[in-house]
Amino acid sequence: MKRAMEVLQHFNHQQVSNLLHSTAKLNIRDFACLERIQQQLLQPHIYTDLNAQDVSNSLWSLATLKISTVTFVQPLVARAKMPDVLEQFTSQHVTNIIWSMAKLGIVDTNLLHALAARALSEDVLFTFNAQGVANVIWACAKLGFKHRKLMGALAHLGAQPALLQRFLSQHIANITWGWARLRLPELDFIHALLIRLQDPKVLRSFNNLELANFTWACAELGIKDRQLFLLLAEHTLQPRIISQYSSVDLGFTSWAFAKASIRHEPLLEALTQRALRPEVAGTFNAQSVSKMVWAYGRLGHKHTPLLEMLAQQALSHSSSGQLRPYQISNIAWGMAALGYFHGPLMKSFSEQISRPAMLLACGSTDVANLMWAFASLGVLTPELMGRLQHRALEPTILANFSRQDLCAITVTYALLGVDPCEQPRAIRARSFGDQATSLPSMGVDNVCPEF
Image (cartoon, rainbow, N blue to C red; front, side, top):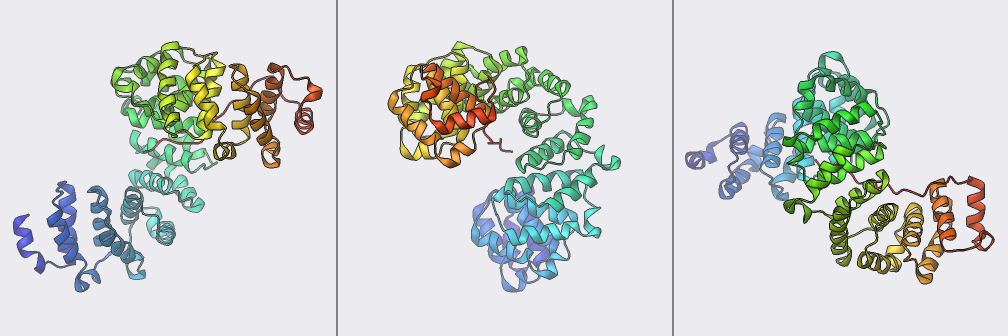
């Protein structure tokens, strides 16, 4: 590197970009050297000669080294948008640039649309390999870039037998995660990928993060194949997997099985024991607590020591104002469904929800679940009930109540001893019109895991 710095001023565009690429490959984070490489790369006579390969390699290098300096990244992004550079991009270049943008958190809609158009051209589209398909789908999801035509083309390409058999566990996990995060309804490609799991070597090669996120994605996509989930449970229970599960993995895995309505006792017990490990118990964030409590409530799996630990974690997050209304709703619902009462936590929840800003952020299901949970646990004061009822009667909330929501509210009034004739007319009208079922409401948040 020392010799390279001595002669750097004599490097041309390709040599500079190759030096940066080698630096990233070797994971050399020498910021003094990187600053000099930046200066040379952005010299007018070098910068204007940067071609597709140079831009692709340079952005990939910065993403790999986790360098998001605007003065370094933005000129490369601008160069990538130049017509004479865009028309040179291959499938590998497109993959590298979109992946780099996702890693660096660069949301440039114009560049993304230009890259999508380039990817869809015939001379590029049919040259994508399995990793390219997976990385582009993952990166688009990470950036929140929902390009239906590109996703459809990649799905059609990926479902072809010749390419399908080349997808490995990491590719399958990235694709399903991306598909779920983008909420794409077409599942033919996903079902084709699931066939790959019939190869024992593919399933065995999942690591803990891939398996947890793949499990979440399957549930989020509405896949309720019992045999698939039993297979996922079996592999999750392997010591090399479950022993590496983080609190985030535990939250998303338990949520997925609850969403799929599959109660697997050995898995739930293993998740419980892992959650109670000292190195894990103190690491639950608000999202993980919310998911795990809701899941155990949904599946009717009561484990008091676990609930005590999660209640303490929830209380800590509630006291510091880190819980969102839907998380409070799901935690309260899960604990009420299991008949578990934690006084300090419920007191904190009552105080949080009584705040106008928090109450205003509650959706229809949140309101219904909170009413039912607080009433079931005997902590629904007249003041809090008044606030929740007032929110429930707001037109936008009232119009969006589901049957389960209306049932939860009906049960709430029954628990409070309120005669049906004394219930608000608008709620009675909605309940009668929808003919609510006899099951209490169940909150399901839409937060997905990060890859």
